[in-house]
Image (cartoon, rainbow, N blue to C red; front, side):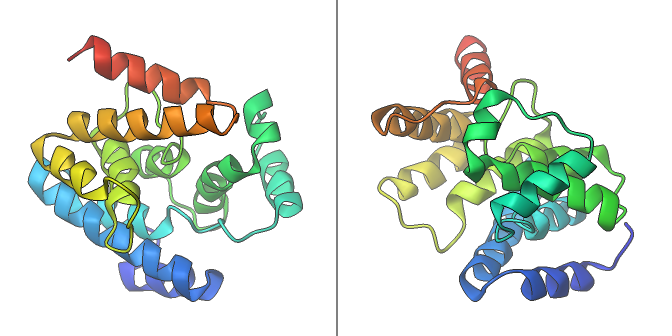
Length: 189
């Protein structure tokens, strides 16, 4: 890795408010726990966890500039869903500014909000760690945590089964990557 893990924590603390930094630390801790449980590199999991929201507090205009400078072409859903941008800009920031070249870490950051079909073990871990971090208290979080302890796939299926209907109920677009991830999980069950 380009930096020591401690430096990633310091960077996250400098770029995020207290609540978001606490969340990022909790995601990193959950990711390490899941990595040990499921056989992933805990260092990679910790790095992806602490950095997953690194651009979350950047304003939309600047995020769009990061996307453009990073050479990413946004689909229509991302263009109209600014809450999805931080995953893309976080990946670009980690790649272009921090010099992280590990594709698995970059993809774990990139797909932690939408998921996608054919996710790697690390990608699943970060997606789930974001759902179950210690400060989370949404309805059914305890069920989500139990599902994740059964298997990553059960946790992902439960998480996507929570998010997709919630987006539909609120008349918000559902990213095709989320649908693809859900369908793959259901079809492979």
